[in-house]
Length: 302
Image (cartoon, rainbow, N blue to C red; front, side, top):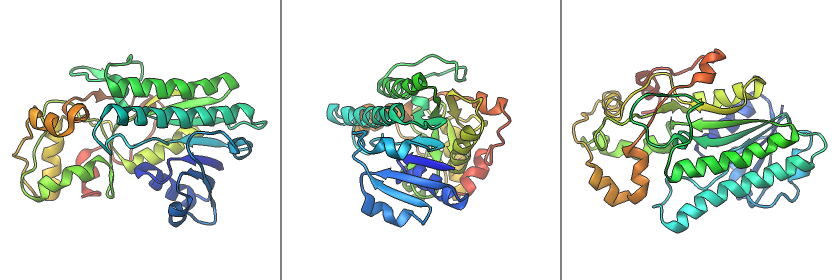
C-alpha cells in the first residue's frame, strides 16, 4: 500500500513505521523535523517536512494514497496542563486534522480510509460498567479534546472517506509511553498503586496497537470509533501488582491522590480515574490479540 503517516516519530508512530517498512509498504512520513526523522526511515519511506497546519502540498501527497493515518498532536503528558498547554494540545490535533481533511477534499484519487487518533479519555471517568464504542461522551478536558478531534476527522466522511477513530487506552511498550514514567518507583522498591487503586486501567500492548491499525485498514466494515484496549480488564491496584511481579519488586507504597494532584494538577485525572473499556468492535470481527493478558504483556516490556 501507499500510506500517508503523521505522528510517525512518536511512541506509537515509530513502531508503526517499522512495521510498514517490514511489510514493504510505501510510506510518506509528514513531520516537523525532517532531519531528525531520517534515522527512522528507509528506502520505502519518503520524509516530508510539514508544520502540522497548512494543507499546502498535502493534496499532491494524499492523491492516490491507499490510507492516511493521522497520529499528530502535542504529547498529552509532556507538560503540566496550564491553560496555554491545554490550548496547544487541542490546537495541534485540530489543525493537523483539518489540514489533512482539506487535502483529501481536493484530491482527485482520494484515499479509501482515514485512520485518526483519539483516546479512551473520550468517555471521561466511569467507575462502573463496561464501556463499548456506543458509550456517550464523558466530561473533562480529555473528553472534550477527543470529541473535537474526532469531529474534525469525521468531516472527511463528507467526501466519501471511511473514517476510523482509534480510542486508545494506555499503551505499553519498552521504550517510552506511560509505562516508562511508572518504572522508577518500582526500581527503587517504592512502587505501588496510585490513588485508591480501584480505578480501571485500560491497557494495551503497543504491538497490538500497530496490528489493529493495519486491521482497520484491511477491514472495510470498520468505521467510526474503535476501542483499543486489551480484553483483560484490570484496576490500577491489579496493574501495579502485576508490574511489581514482572519486575521482581514489591507493590506496597500507594501514591495518595492529593500528592499526585499537587504534583501534576489537572493532569492527575488521567491516573486517578479510568474506565472499564471493552474492545467490542474488534472482538466482533475476530481480531486476535497478541497480548490479551497483562502478565505476558508486561513480561515483554520490563
